Image 1 (tube, rainbow, N blue to C red):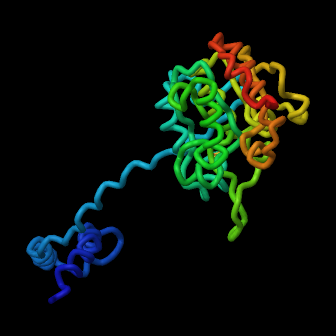
Image 2: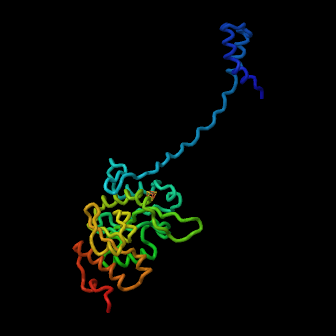
Image 3: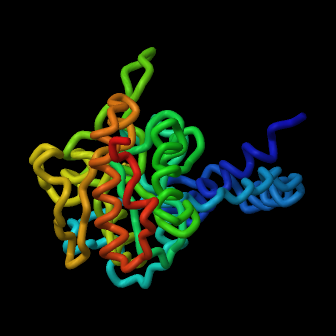
Length: 281
Ligand code: SF4
């Protein structure tokens, strides 16, 4: 195909300039210019590329800021537990965890629960299921909850850290969350607690107590009495995984005595049978 129309179009401005006599001798007559214009207008219109399909709007990662006492997750917004969950699912404040997690494990249970359990972080089972406390330790926690007279649907269960702590490539198992990871994630839990307003919190294990309260004393010094989170009584007790490792009756009884204190604080009925669990025969 001839390239003349394109060449003519390119030459047209120069020819116009020359014809206007801008300091150079015209090299094209008005008749030549007219021919060039005719060729240009006869040229088929240049093909336009079809418009690019609209891109989906990028979903902005949510970065929690603030601390437990002054949570600042988009502070002007009125949150429900569901809208908070949706925002947490997009959180990328810890790139190393956001890049390795399968699910953000937000929490599960009754949004109006009077009793809320707080663990440290999801493990492999929880990361796969997207739900806290579903592995062996979680099954034991479910038994404890049922023995107290509740169910997983009537209480609320969450972790301080919402994403599974990453592990070196090729290794199995779980690792403890680091203090800075828990500090970064704490605003999500703080807002959960603020929305749910439980009457009693149970912190499961020393790491959960550290993440929630900044307390670093060992569990044998923490359990059996009440701690405080923003005016909400907190019972610290052993993590169910500890009871799986240590099956002695005396350790089970310690956890159960902590749960009896919780029931008492909630004003829940306690049967004689419940009072006698894990005592020596
Ligand atoms: S651990 Fe918490 S703060 Fe970090 S990316 Fe997950 S949800 Fe966000």
